[in-house]
Figure 1 (tube, one colour):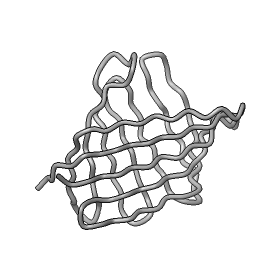
Figure 2: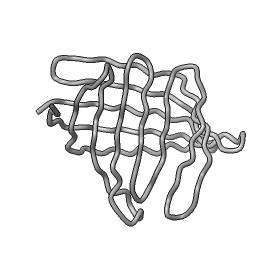
Figure 3: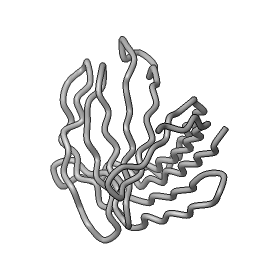
Length: 140
């Protein structure tokens, strides 16, 4: 059975030029557990994307998968010490990315979960940015 929750996402990206950008969002989410994995489901409407994007965060142990479906599509895998490839599909084209995760930490409390990811994004061997993503889920 799904539990209603509030999800706060804070992403930081620092490009090669050293400039940092921060994105923050708060959305309603559904949380459930199945076969030893935890799932967070939510929707967002990215600027200029032309439609809603359905998101699923799945995590267990030390691995997190973030899947986007809709106007933007991707499946990113975060696992400390590992690099995973993904095609990030947007209305403007496809970007082939390598996601190299430095840190993936998970802290579960009675009222929710906190996750921190630190990773780099590259494309074709060219560094694009150093990133962090903080995910805070609080049950309602």
